[in-house]
Amino acid sequence: METVTSADGTTIAYDRAGDGPVLIVSVGAFCTRHSFLPPAELTQRFTVVTYDRRGRGDSGDTIPFAPEREYEDLAAVAAVTGTEPPFVFGHSSGAAIALRAAARGLAAAGIAAYEAPFTNDQTPPASADPTARIRELVAAGRERDAVIFWMTDVVHMPEQATAGLKDAPWVAALEPLARTLPYDIAITAGGVPADELAKVDVPVLVMGGGNSPAWFQRSVAEQTAALPAARHITLSGYDHNAPPEVLAPILAEFFATGR
Image 1: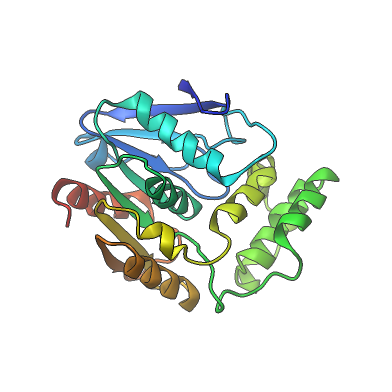
Image 2: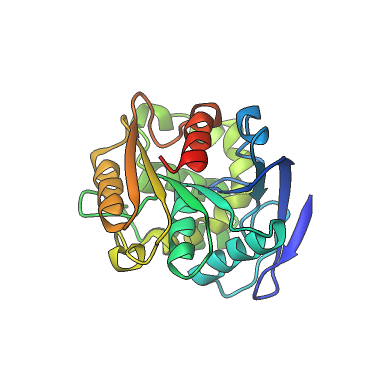
């Protein structure tokens, strides 16, 4: 593990694996730097850098939060891990961070964005304000209920998949990350930021899953249209969570050729 100090003084932890041009991975909700295990297909061609977003894993946090802090964190990791602009792969809210950081001046050689969850009028609404409800539950020491609220009312997992969440052992591993969920919401709220994305002047590969809901597919299409140098591909048979071994050859080809 290595660390870097972000612009507001927050310590950000990261790991490196492999050799070659730097490829930074920016993860989504409920993820840490250990969530994306880079396959050999990537580490043989890139120095893959995975980092803990603020408030997660070994990274610190500084209150109050603002979305700009996440963009600064990514920029700090980029500045310390290489002398040339890095490639960046972002998943979910991590993809939103990558795109919005680039719009604010992050120098990147290329960006691959998998389903940044910018909402639209097809996005199913939550039963209560997600940020307020999650903060209320966390403040009351009810992190497990915050995780379940996210799964059922924000992500809208199928009913059959949410049965037994209260007793599921894997939910316990997510509880320490529940307090960071409002960060993900803040980064992706307000719909596709077309004016911002229009400022991203590097090649972008926008990816989406063929099994993802219609609102996600519309969102990634709108992101592609807003980006000046973007290409959109759909991964048939996958949804919001395509595994690293499926993504690796796609990322390797795109970052090597721009196509």
